[in-house]
Amino acid sequence: GQNIDQPTEMTATEGAIVQINCTYQTSGFNGLFWYQQHAGEAPTFLSYNVLDGLEEKGRFSSFLSRSKGYSYLLLKELQMKDSASYLCVLFNFNKFYFGSGTKLNVKP
Amino acid sequence: EAQVTQNPRYLITVTGKKLTVTCSQNMNHEYMSWYRQDPGLGLRQIYYSMNVEVTDKGDVPEGYKVSRKEKRNFPLILESPSPNQTSLYFCASSSRSGRNSPLHFGNGTRLTVT
Image (tube, rainbow over all chains, first blue to last red; front, side):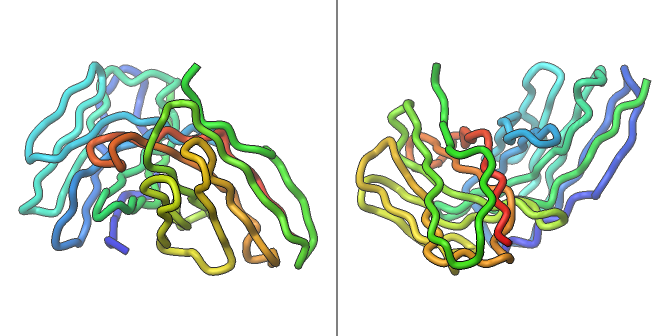
């Protein structure tokens, strides 16, 4: 495995901003994905980083620092429908390695 | 509509009875893969395929077989299912061998082995 660590659960308020962190221990990888998964459903793609820096897609942004072994997903203007699990995924040598996911609870 | 189709959605079987879970994609994707999802463990890759007739093991291949005779289909075979294979299974595909290309997932198959 790639020793991918994410917080198990987080709670945030509707309209707020939340940052979900992901740390990993690997010597190299091709890229890092973030997926959203609602309970009982399939994961859906949110964002992808291959180079260091910030990638922005609407309300969602993802950041990668290879030197620090660290990524985060930033969700702005939280909505109730953002309550879901968020998966940090490394892609390396044709294989995908998933973190255990962070369950985000958005409260009114 | 571009999609990955898995069947069945739910399956209850007994130990040792061979079963196949089908997966088909209509996006002409080269890369296809199977995952199992267990509480607290996240998704783990079982097998993947880079193209027709090219398959390789993921992290947890024991007890599973796959085949890729056609580009669109990638069935998962359990020759002799055991209770520890009770899990939620996902098939996924992507283009360009997965590089820079996100996975598109099927809706999942919830398997119970008694």
